[in-house]
Amino acid sequence: MMVVDVSKFSPSLERLVQKISKLPGLGRKSAARLALHILRQPEEEARELAQAILDVKTRIHLCRICSNFTEDEVCSFCSDARRDQALICVVETPGDVLRLERTGSFRGLYHVLGGTLSPLDDVGPDDLRIAELIERVKGGAVREVILATNPTTDGDTTAHYLLRALKEYGVAVSRIARGVPVGAEIEQVDEVTLASALESRTRLS
Ligand SMILES: [Zn+2]
Image (cartoon, rainbow, N blue to C red; front, top):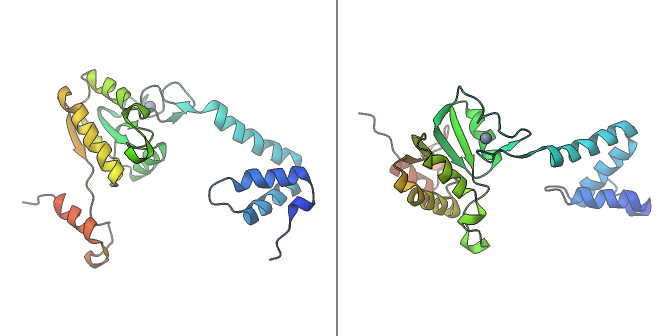
């Protein structure tokens, strides 16, 4: 396909291409294709797209309790009385909440940290919503906290930090198991994963 140099057309088209190409996963070529597509669409479509972008920025904020994304003061999980209010699953991002929800197997509440501790990137406990988590546990109504940060160095560091921080509140703390993915064979799994699968084995008898 011939690459069209849209900067030759107009400064406003060039500006749109530049903005779109800043989005993750889009190079200048894809950005130019999208910009030209928007240009060909009815004005109403373009207006709705622009409004939808503005709406997510102005309407969505963090849940007062769990720091998940919501348009209300309290998110749909925290305000659902049918969920187990004594069980909190700690995750890094709102995206992790969606992934866990898709499994359909968790009926407790969430707590979104907003990242992980990362000494190299200068991210400390005050940069995450750790104090808010401790506040929730302090209330005494929480039975168990499941640490579902990623099995990365920073995710593990964060889990260890939280384990220590929660110790004095007498709450059970668990870590999600890591191991052989469902459907995978042992010969396809790397040694680190296999070692941790052995470590987080479950007893059968
Ligand atoms: Zn919430």
